[in-house]
Amino acid sequence: MHRREFLKSSVMAGAMFAFSRKPSFAESIDARIEVLLDEPIATISPNLYGHFTEHIGGVIYDGVWVGENSKIPNQNGIRSALLEHLKQIKAPIIRWPGGCFADSYDWKDGIGPVNERPKRTNFWETESDAARLHERGPQVFESNRFGTDEFVQFCRLSGAEPYIAANLRSLSALEFDHWVEYCNSPAGSTALAEKRSAQGSPEPFNVRYWGVGNESWGCGGNFTPEDYASEFRRFTTWVPSYGVDLQFIGSGPNGNDIDWTHRFFEEVFSGRPYFNPNFAGWSVHHYAWNLSRGKTQDWIQAKGDALAFDDVDFYELLRESDRIEQIIGDQWAAMGQFDAEHRVKLVVDEYGPWYREGSEVDPAHIFGQQITMRDALATALTLDTFNRNADKVSLATCAQLVNNLNALFLVHEDHFIATPNFDVFRMYASHQGAQAVRAEFSAPSVNYHRDGKPATFWGLEGSASRNQDTVTVTVVNPDLANAKLTEIAIPGARIDHATGSVLSARDVHEHNTFDRPDNVRTEKLEATVSERLVRVGLPAASVSRIDIEVK
Ligand code: AHR
Image (cartoon, rainbow, N blue to C red; front, side, top):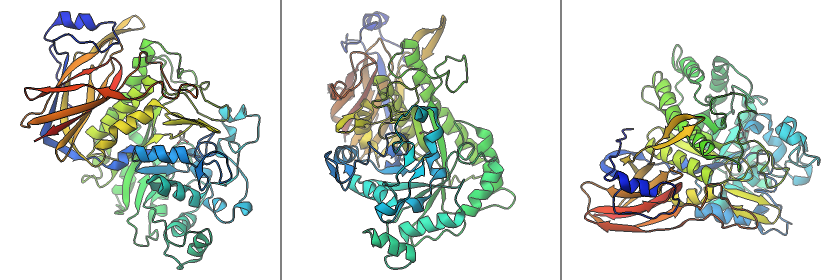
């Protein structure tokens, strides 16, 4: 992406903003955004705004599922507050049942009469976070109370499409076919359709999206790319379709491992090429976890704290999150060497910051962590990156929806809060299905000191889309110290009026708690229109959305 350095019209005015977190503005302009309507990128798939729920810690049990007989308001056992909030953000798709859990899960355990479902050991039982659990709860021993029917019900009630990750490590290709059959075979057609019907669903679920394994380079089997490619061919050949346009998603690299992608694609597309029109997506996982400032790659040592962080940690987390743009570009190029027409698109089905344990709202919530304004900025810049790459990324699911990593919700028993990430998803929802267009964000870089050495981070970044007469611009101001008076220009368009909303806080450590559930919430952003320009004041460390009516 081209980025022009913005020449400030007044150095003095800039100095006035330094060290102020308040959006107070002098007359001169700090930044400029130019929306280029005649440079369309692609339609933004609503599926870029998806979510992920795994059988881990407090995600399913406590998070999603409370049970039909619970005093917590629920619909068929599913937490009502969660369903209501998912509708507000137009949640398009939900991935389940893992994650690493997927490759140890036998879907047959989770169907049929509830009291006949077997109790099994959860994949995460060996995780050090689980070891500290003194109770033998569902985090350690899976009850299978929540299975395929309950998941599809969860999706239907929240308005989302189901995306199921299949077990490639420890189940057979035939069992994969049978899971598809259970979900999609027509009413009364097969023994599995009868079983589904006996559970109250005679009509097929019509599940389109199927992950073929998860992290097959690691917990999903420790395969080599060549061996995984061979399994992938076997699992995806002649899967019964029942008229559903199945979308198979291959298990892609860890971060930006180009070697994994290169060798998988070479194996699948060269030599004896495998043309399967249902091979639609290549999954990428990107967690921002290394806050060691380059000192270590150790998975435990390198992690930072969700709540206790300094200014350098703040920029470090944004920098780590921002690597997603490079990953998308590099992976796309590697795939293109073998799939020149790019029939296979990128699917970023796990992303978000990952901190050390300690801020979870309940000890049973493995990988649970608090979500501050810092995380809201990281989520927003990631979603903007997806919008800017709408031609390459077809689906993304944030890891994870509730009580885990980059959560939109933190809940325990009858307590429920929406984190600042929820606000980001609500603000960005209007990009769904709109036409992404190129936009240039010009602002002076942020300068700071990183362990005694000068460091910089970009000054303003975001994305733009058009839906009929409405142009939506979303923008992240990462600057901890400076608000930015920003002009938005849309060459060739007559601007009618503009409205805005902004997510910011007195301090980037701010977050919501059960006692202060609305401590951080979106507010109205003043947007003025004059001389074919929109003018907004973007507070320090903020996420904003501006809707501009054009003619
Ligand atoms: O989201 C938590 C875990 O992170 C997932 O189970 C796995 O796929 C990834 O390593």
